[in-house]
Amino acid sequence: MKALRIGLLLAMVVAVAAFVVAEDKPWFDLENCEMCKGMVAQEGLMENMTWDHYLTKNGMMTVTTIADGYKEKFEASHKTMMETVEKLKAGEEMYLCGFCTRHGELAQAGVNMEHFTTKVGDVSLMTSTDEKQVKEIHAFAQKTIDELVKMAAAKSDGEEG
Image 1 (cartoon, rainbow, N blue to C red):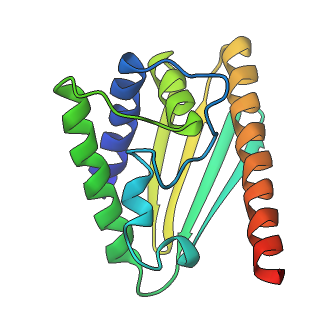
Image 2: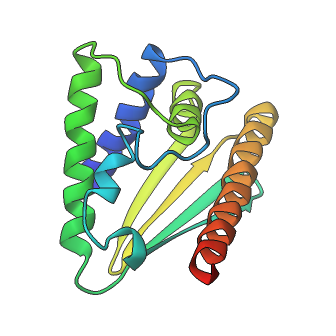
């Protein structure tokens, strides 16, 4: 499991080398992003996981929780992402959303990344001792938090209507 998460980070690094972020690119594009597709392909996974981001003094922390019975689907989504990594390494061009592209840029810039598997999901840290990188990580984290709030509001509006 830990190797899968490390591989995901490597995938994002490789992806960044192949793509330039367009200003009008959606931050999240779960249907079209080659990295994100692996999660939505697993029926029920997105509805049975949480993905929370927190700014820390020197970066950010991401906490992912997986509901009982969905751990295998979560692992399968990472397997799909690893297959995407291999395609990117082979030079195949693929579309990535703004989040995946920016995550890869930060990884490529050398920020520290740590991943911990828990009984109910995982925890990731993205940190730096460089003040400029910390500001970039904070901006990335805040953009992610803001976009997740927008997604939740849009989903809520859609369910009510």
